[in-house]
Image (cartoon, rainbow, N blue to C red; front, side):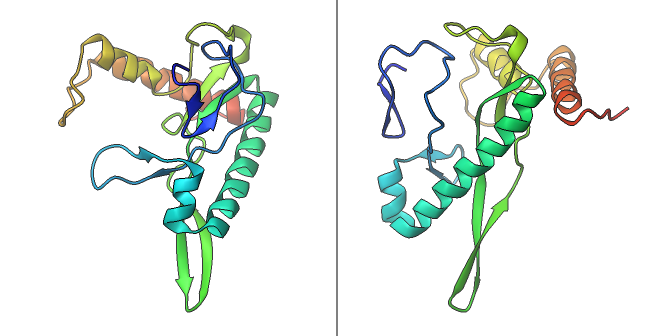
Length: 174
């Protein structure tokens, strides 16, 4: 990491690209009016939604990650990172935290095969990184609308997603 931190969380010095962190970290973000999420620090999250709710979301997030990473590890997959989205349902004075959107999918996570894992370099993956790499290769300016993807990129991405599904679930969609 060039800055030595992620969302205000200091990282150990000397980490190499793709190297496992000593422990998972909580990196909150907030929704932008349009476009990408905006990364914020845990302190900023506490200021926006309250310290107590931020602490609870951190506990839930790290617990979900631990369960997902443990399952993936048992299938020889590393969950390098992931994103969870939460909402609140209010019923009078009572608020219930709910997990929303996708959970531990190739769109919201980076899945790396353990057999090919080698810190210090980019990792092969079963996720949307293949599309990101293609878009970087063609130097897309990241302004909507996005470019059309060639059939080869679509099919290769599909294969990666199916491989992730088969490996993690021990099932097939065919």
